[in-house]
Length: 353
Image (cartoon, rainbow, N blue to C red; front, top):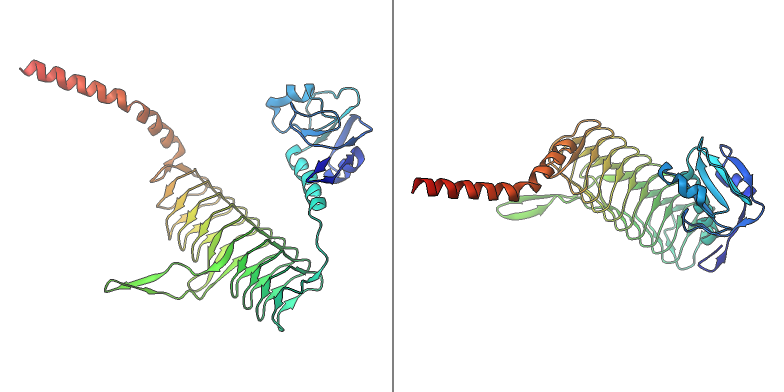
């Protein structure tokens, strides 16, 4: 396949190695894979996948030469076609795409670009890459195999853990920490001042924010995210959490391990978000509340009180998803209800006269 002018192809055996030992090849295809496409659009020589069984018929009829299928699906490959059976086909395709991404964007050679500025007492691993116009201030620490792509700022005594990638224009402010194997996308700020003021006699007096942000291992943070430093202690993003683009996380917030925070969500100060929570897009979370493990907050919800473990809520102010659905049904009936009330009022008025 040619992607952005780079020729990339795989044999079935190469795919099997990429996918790992939990897969099984059914059928025979001896050519190479030179493209990826959906089941209905795929042509011979291309790879596709079946993740949802409602598309099983499309998989059986697909012209793709190789299809990733779930375990136990009873469909047979055609001539010059093979299926690769595995537990999670969608994850398998992600592994293939990861390999393609690595070939499209090969890791730069370790070293510090001559246009970067690194403080004499900063610690930069010999295996790390520091790109052009990056700045690493006094006491900064950059771990093994880290990539600072370009224009990245690592503040005083800030730390970046092994194998992490900070993309262009990321700012890691003073004393803040990013763990191992993290990805932080362009224009994100970690450790901006928390939004805190004391108002006296009509004047807003700034409350200095002297805490830090700790991003634990295996976290991915999207583009244009702002994570504020704590007023005194730590704003924490738990291990394996995923934060989408354009998210605001305020001072002293804790996002639990494995949680997902979707685009344009705002989390106010000192809120505690548990493990494996989902905060859907444009949700707004008030300050000083607790959201229990595995809770789900629906899109555009406004959360103003605690949510228990496993609860699912929507709406502003938030209610359970079941109640939200009932309210939505009743709202659709409001125009007819008003018409009925008008008719009753007119009938009552006529009878009185």
